[in-house]
Length: 360
Length: 181
Image 1 (cartoon, one colour):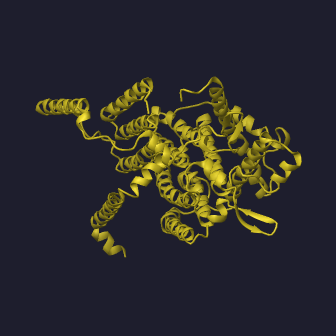
Image 2 (cartoon, rainbow over the protein chains, first blue to last red):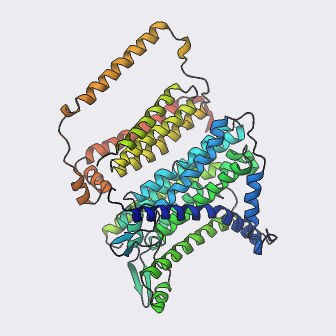
């Protein structure tokens, strides 16, 4: 640590700032995507008045959120009531720090990694910090001093604990195949070729070696981010708005922001673990050769591939939300404990057997 | 492996402050939230000692899982009633508890002063951990070779605990169970 020069510090601070700025843009952009996407699926127009395609609608919404009256209801525990949105937002921002968006770049005698921190325990760090997000929701429900809010936060903590288990176990398969918890190593290992079918090379992406694991991980990610079809913590028809019932103006917007940032991290994880992370999309390596670009162009193409994959999963979240109805609570618990958990255990045994037989 | 004294002082004093809040807060949920922060300060100190795996597990297991269940139980039991009111307790109890705490504090001070006398240091050095590829690898290798039996026995013990808890919970309302099915 002591050998860090001024330039190293500058790079580190730059990476922090860039990552934070990207994350801050997620909520407004996704709010627009969600509204236009739902309109597309329900055969209506959606916001289309402000700016081209209604793109500036989110900006106006932001201004509205900030300038609205910001009341604190009389019956709440004021300290924890104000703290709760922050507690749910901060872990959401912290988790993205270890996800790499391009391969490490050799520049002269220094290696630049394209993530804020390249931790040896990368994946465990994400699970550790992500498990803290539930406190924001518990705190909000409890401090609001309202029965609907408390019900919402109890539902949420129950759901998050149940699905965290299958989420963690589904990743074990990936850890076994690539034998690392470091996300850069996992993404690099997915550059190998799994099968050569004539001219088409199928890469060793996590999805091709762990299809069952991906299915479980993806389902659990929907539950962890409280998105439909698992948005029972805020089920409007049953408990009004759940844990953020007593929140208004910017404090409500912060909860929404945390949800979108969590979605972004979950999409980043799905891309990194199961779809090659920063490995180039098909056709991009040919493009790189055609331009004859160097390492810098390569890093840019890798970042483009990564964010394209993330964008796809973000859209997938929206797509599912406006397609599937909400689960009933007992169905949610049955699915979590009686289907997903045995399946994720089976996945571990299958992976072990396949690795023993040297298929993977 | 060297711990920066500024960071150590900061996190140690934060840990002590939050630990005091755990005891002093009247509301059990607020105490539980403070306890989470104590665990977080510990994790920060582990991370500064280059024990990244331990830090991640500390947050994952204690702050992320166990304390959520704690708070869950507290909220379900609606235990907003303060469990212990020092103001109305007996004088003898106050003096007794004070004396016991002082003795305990003395024991801790003695133990930390004589820390060299507690056995030899382990064989894992910083260089050795680096050679196997990091904390995660070093701990996993030990856990699944030398300490495999204790590790498996601990998991069986935890399983027994879970089965026992379910058995007790089921037995408490036999009438409901009988008429239900």
